[in-house]
Amino acid sequence: MTLSTSVAGQAGSVSPALATSVAKTNTRMLAIDALRGFVMLLMLIDHVRETFLLHRQVTDPIDALSVTPDLFFTRLLSTLCAPVFIFLTGLSAWLYSQKHTASETSVFLLKRGLFLVFLELTFVCFAWNAEFPPKTLWLQVIWCIGICMIVLAGLLHFKRGWLIVLGVAIVAGHNLLDGVTVGPESPFFVPWSILHQRVFIDITEFTRARTTYPVLPWIGVILLGWAIGPWFGKDMDPAERISRLLKVGFGLLAAFVFIRYLNVYGEKPWVQTGDSLRTFMSFMSAKKYPPSLMFLMPTLGLGLILLALFEKAQNRWSTATLAVYGGAPMFFYLLHLYVLKAMYLVAVAIWGANQGTYYGFDNLPMVWLWSVILGVLLFFPTRWFANLKQRRRDIAILKYL
Image (cartoon, rainbow, N blue to C red; front, side):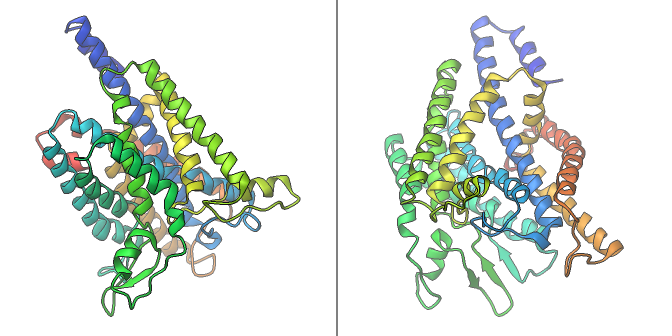
């Protein structure tokens, strides 16, 4: 049964007013899941690249003057993933709060945040390293989402207006802190590294942690996702919601172009290279770790536009298909990491390290080909798990995945 037929079935057995409410709710959720699924497929492309193209690593921000254009734009596509996913996490938390008290929502976010941190330190780290105990704990996006949820669990009790101000202030102003660095000798080294400094932290003689995703700017993103929640309230007219999403989305893109052109704030200056393509690449190159203002404005702007477009395209099979991936995000995330690790280890065992110390593809099109193959193959177990989540709401652990 598809989502659309499920809605139709509900609408046929209830009053017209309730049927309309059910349809609106499913439309909102379908668009959110479709956008989440879309960025997860972009993430898959990037992780296939990171697994089988390690011999052609890219810097952060991407060096537009040296990297090949095909690799640049492949990497650029993936920059949409983390901002959109964390923004949607805030939005989903607000939707959860509409059926639960503030205290219940806080407890849920706290539990899920701690669960995500646990997953990052155990199953996710092992998927990347295949080491136990791990020599390095990579504190990446799942850790970041978990910490952001824990922070949101405390801040959601403040008025929405204050959260908007705080979210905007963090996203727009955190680049003012770029020059603040703290050394290991300082008692503030660990907290500042978690917040805004991408470094290694020695834990024991044998283990260290890498703050790949400093969380401060991402806290601003999840707050903005929460703040936009009322636009997705049951009383909001869909046409008005779509209009607002498009206006803010295009407004962010326009503001990005204007501020980036001025070359004065929010990112390493772009350069005129004498080559229009390289100049454009330099203009678009932005730091992700931690994300600069010039990284977040276009990605969040495009995310809002896509969210509006998915809601307008709710009846298309492609939207429903993407929503399947978005309906079981953590399952898909863990599954694709372990599949990629297994593929890599099998390839090394069969063909050996053909790219220096790595096994890797000879060209980028192979990354795209295998991304398509894996995207199709992983659809079926993801659909099964998404259906299981819907069927077995009595299994508490499933709602965290």
